[in-house]
Image 1 (cartoon, rainbow, N blue to C red):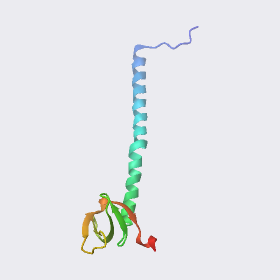
Image 2: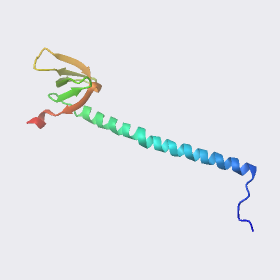
Image 3: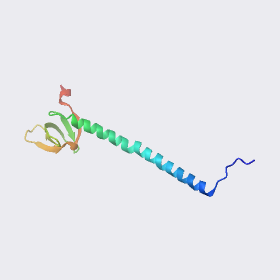
Image 4: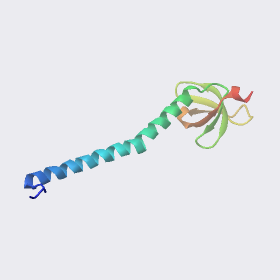
Amino acid sequence: MNFLPVLTSGGGTAGAIGILVAYIAVFAVLMYFLSVRPQKKRQKKMDAMLASLEVGDSILTTSGFYGVVIDISEEVVVVEFGSDRHCRIPMQKEAIVSVEKANEEE
């Protein structure tokens, strides 16, 4: 008695297509967990940081400058750099990398 299954010409092609679809699905799930999900987590963390931004907070910009927040609007933040009161520059909120709260220092 022969227990090996008999392969027909139509069944082999359908099986190969099924395996290919399974590999593509596994690859898509893997890419989601390796690239998309961590990026969304970082974006949520950044949005929460910018939402908690207040006047008087010390910030670090993407260009490496440290400053203090003077005024906040919807998309623009006015930042004072250094101890000179004449060096106030408006900049986009997205240019802020990190925030150190003013009340944590006290």
